[in-house]
Length: 326
Image (cartoon, rainbow, N blue to C red):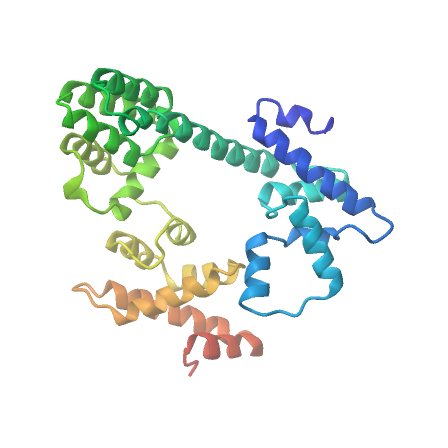
C-alpha cells in the first residue's frame, strides 16, 4: 500500500477499500506455503457470476479443492477479478507496476464510483416528490435544479431529459432552457461530444425528447467531423452490435480488402467471430448502392486470403464461416 499510495492519492474512498481488500487476498495467495489459499491463477479468472453459471447450468463437476477455494472467496466477499485487480496481481507477483494502463484503469474505477455517488445524491431529491403530499412545489423544484447542477458532469442526457420534463410540467420553461444550456456548456470535452454523437445511432423515442434539447443535440450532430475511424474503431464503438447505422456500414465499406485482411489478422479476442460474421451477414441485406453486399464480398476475399496461408486457417475459414476457398 505504501508503494501504491502516490498513485492512489486523490481516489475515491471506495477505491482504497477495494485495493486493500484485493491486495490482502493476493499477497496471502502468493505467499501461502500450506496450500490453503486459492492460487492466483484461480483468482485471476474468478467471478461469482461465472461460478454460478458453471455449477448451476453447466453442471460442472468440481473437486473438493475447487469447492474449498470457492467457499473462501465467497466468505471474503470477493465477487470478481476486474481489470484493475489484474494489474494488482501482476504487481504482487512481479514487484513492479505498469503505470500507464494502471492509471487508466484507476481513472475508470474512480469515474464509476463518482457516477454512483452523483446518482445517489441526485436521486435523493425525488424523495421530496414521492414521499409526501406536502405543498412543497418550490422546494422540490429548487432542490432538483440545485442537485442536478451539483452533479451535472456525470449525469446523462436521460437524466437531463427527466429534469427538464419535470420543470416544464410545472411551467418552469425558462429554468428548463437554462439547464439545458448549462449542461452542454459543462459537458463539452471531446469524450462528451463523442457520447452525444453516438446518441444519433442509439437513441430511440426522439419524438418524446424535449424540443429544445433535441435542437441542441442536432446542432452537435450537424457539426460531426469527417469520419476518420479505423475499421476496428467502427466495430468497437458500436454498442448495440446487432443494430447498425447505415453511416457505419458505409464507413466499413470505404476500406479495402487489404484493410479487412489486416483487421481480421490483428484481432485476437472473443469478438473476432462477431466481427467476421457481421461483415458476412451484411450480404443478406440490400441497398440501392450495394454497400452491404460490397462489405460482405470484401470480407470473403480477405478470409480466402487468410485461409490460403495455413491448413488450420483453411479449416477455420471454411468450418467457422462457411466461406468457399475455391
